[in-house]
Length: 57
Image (cartoon, rainbow, N blue to C red):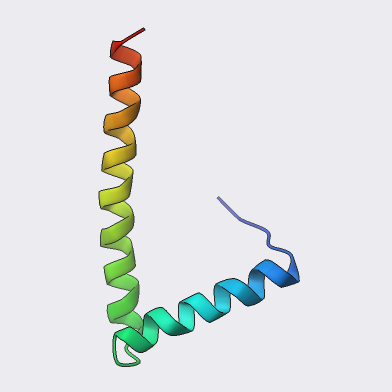
């Protein structure tokens, strides 16, 4: 999926990304790996909620 952002959102995303990388002592690869893991956990939770909604229908 390709996401298109306007310049305001792109600038805001850049600030967040820079802060996240800074939390990992400037290691962008380490930050990316953590973000992938965090997104995986979030996706699992969203999938569980969706399964719960389907079960109650």
